[in-house]
Structures are given as C-alpha cells and as structure tokens.
Image 1 (cartoon, helix red, strand yellow):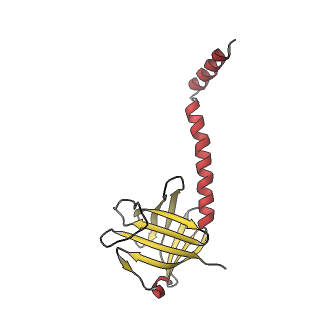
Image 2 (cartoon, rainbow, N blue to C red):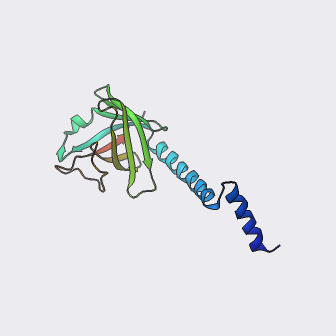
Image 3 (tube, one colour):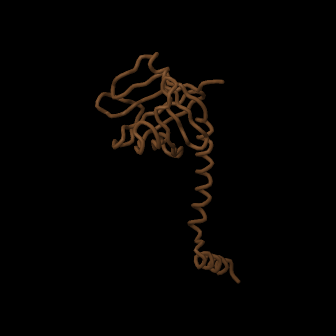
Amino acid sequence: MSMNRRHAIHRGLLVACGLAAAPLRLARGDDAKEEAIKKEFLAVEGRWQAVSIELDGNRLAAEECKKFVFEHGRDGEWELIVDGTELARGTTTVDPSQTPKTVDFVTTGGTNAGERTYGIYEVTGTTWRICNAQAGRPRPAEFSAPAGSGRMLVVFELVKD
C-alpha cells in the first residue's frame, strides 16, 4: 500500500471518528496556551500594593495609592482591599499571546458586582502595570488614562512577606 493511500485512510478514520487533524492541532495549541496562562497567573500571584493610580486623567496622591491592595490567586481569583476593607472581588482571565497582553476582570462581589471590564497588562519583575477601561468601554490599546478616556492606569508593586 502506498504512503499516500495509508495517509488518506488514516485521515478518513480520523474524520469518521470526529478527530480530524485540525482539531488535534488545536488541542496541542490549547495546551500551550493553558500553560502560558498558568505561568502568567504564577507571575501575578500574591499581594500587590498600588504605587501609582491615574483615573481618567487624574492622578491620586502617593499616600492615597498605598491604601489600595490587590490580592491575586494563581486560580485567577482576586480581591481589592482599600484601607484594610474588601471593596470588591472577582475573577481574572488573561491572554498572554496578545500584544499587549490582555486581561478581563469580572466582579463577582462588592462594588460593581456583575460588571466585566477589559484591559491590558504587563509584569516586569515585581511590578505589575494594568490599564483597564470602565465597564462598557473598549479595551485600551496603550498604557495611558487621559481625561475623557474612561480608563484607569495602575502600577502595583509586589508586597514581600
């Protein structure tokens, strides 16, 4: 039996069983993407303190920024704490294959429960920079939050225990 005929038969069996070659390639790609996402969640796991916050063109004073703490788990769950009190909590979805990397936040409790917001992020060592749009606004394309943009740019530093 020729090699081409053998490949045709194998392909026919895969198609008949619902296992065409394209989905198999996608499954391997999905595994690689899942590994990349796990790696990102490990990079942002921990307790992060805001060191800079700009909201719609307005910068908060450094002392005000220090009141904001963001706790992020390796499973994507997060909690926003202000002055020692939980303000909100939710889940995160990231896509590290995008440039810039994308992040979606879904608030499941506290302030703005039920909202989904879209942003971009970068992690460099112990610094995590996030630019996020207000709910209902499109994902930012750059790390900026000028007046009227409806965006927030936050820089966090990892809190070492």
